[in-house]
Length: 198
Image (cartoon, rainbow, N blue to C red; front, side):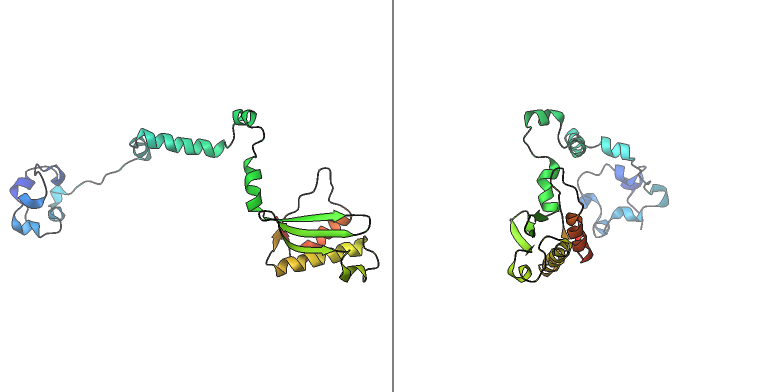
């Protein structure tokens, strides 16, 4: 199929002086899906190559400034000026840690018994509790504060947490508190019974 002489006079089909749409073409070309698909080989369009630098430079200054702001904000979450102006504002970790590690283990050792529980930090809901002061353990254990009592409490915490579909918990020791002795024994028993510490 040959093109009209009006189009073949130009170097490329995209630079034709036809104004408007295909209405100025003859009727046989109006039914064709695209008259430029049947161009001769001499009029075939050349491939267009655009570099990444040209693509970025072609963006509007508003979009470029927005991209620069997003990158800058991602790397500097809180400047030194904000720290001096708002010293009591919580950091990014303090604000998101409640949702990243929602289940917290609390352990309390007294002179008479051992108490441990897993709490949901967002709702303060108690997931599982175990204590040597409970009726089922107080009358069966020979001692309520020794190593066997720690192992029993750790095993009960692990089993009751898995029953509540909680398989990952976190534990944050208090200031100047070392994970050793009875505390290490309790945490190690929980870990051996299938609970992951995150």
